[in-house]
Every structure is written in C-alpha cells, then in structure tokens.
Image (cartoon, rainbow, N blue to C red):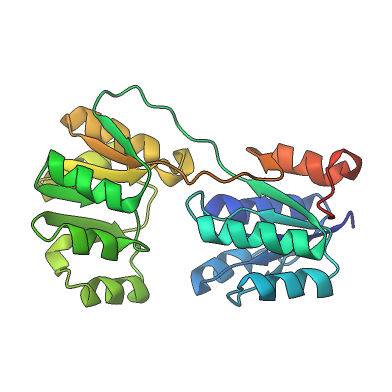
Length: 261
C-alpha cells in the first residue's frame, strides 16, 4: 500500500476516482451519504466505505484515528460547505488535502447569463421568462420556490423517494416534476424542454459529466436563454482536474506542500 486515502466521493466521477486509486494499490476509504452511492461502490471489494454523514469535527476524528495520509475531496463542484469542512479537517489532522474537481465547460452562446448565487439565478430567470425549467438538482429548490411564486416552474430531479417527498413538501405538483436520472442527450433535453414549454433554463457549470454541455446545446437549438450559476470560489491547497493529476500528487509525496502548521 502506498498511503491511506480518505476520499469524499459525492459524485459519479468521485466514485470512479476511488476505484482508480484502489486499482493503483492505494488503501482507499470512500465516504458517501446515500444508499445509492454505497451500492455503486460496493461492487469494488477493495474500497472501504463510510456512509455516516460527517461534520468537520467528526471528519477530523476519522482522519486522525484512521491514520490517513491524504484527504481527496471529490465532492460536487457546488458543495461549498463540504469542501470548506474538508480543508479545515485535513489541516487540523495535519494531513495532505487534494481537491479533485472536474473541468468547467466554456460555452460560446450569447444567451448565457452567469450569476454567483441561487438567489440571483431566480431573480434573473424571472426577468427572462415565465416558464422556468430548473436543472440545478433538489438541494436548493426551496430558494426557487420561494422567490418564483409568480412563475411556472418545472424541476428536474433524481427519482428517489426522499427527493420526491421534498418536492411534495414544497408544494410542487406532479406536473411540475421531471423525476429522471441522467445523463441526458442533447436530443432528450430538447424534447424535455419543449414538452415543458420552457422559456428559460437554469443550470450550473457541472462539467460534461454533469450534462452541462448537452443542456446548453439543447437550449441553443431552441434559442432559449440560460441562467448559469457559477461555481463557488474557494482557495484549494492542492487542485487536480484529472485522475492522473491526483495520482501524481499522492505518488510523489515529496512534491506536496505539507499542511502542517
């Protein structure tokens, strides 16, 4: 083994990264917060799994007691609080923090309007159209429901009982909910946007694996405006955009700046 790694695997590519590092003979413990995430990782027998939600103090305790050498943060690009806690916990435990973050996609489309918050996205979307199609997931739905009471919302979310219950609690009707799991092709996005009568699309720059490219392509075909929420701005101690870059850092510890105080 080449050093113990605690990996926050909150995304599909995070889970693939855990498998990649495990195949390179690293001792990997992957942290997930859903039964679905656990089931996906259970297919790789070499990976240990933590499915307990962790706050900063609990994460620091695990890092210390588990004698980990690295914390690889492969949480979602928009999971700002998770990354902030991971940076602090790694620093406190005096281990090396590495942020893996999929690359953003650059779009040449004149109808993209970028904003820095979900609140700003709701305000801008209301300016651009009445029928608003949300592809931002379920975590911040309440912000849009509260701010867009005079708009017609369609929300695309994962088809899990937890998420659907959340939608129901927010007062969303079945007609407003598209419960599907991606990835979505450009052609499917076109049909879904047309079926909903969408006048504006709200999304995030989640990279190709998050389907940002096909959403924008579909919007262009339909000549629809897009409100895109920028990624949170965080100063990462070590940042990698590919699996190989993560491997290089963990394989060559001498080139890593220690996080020790």
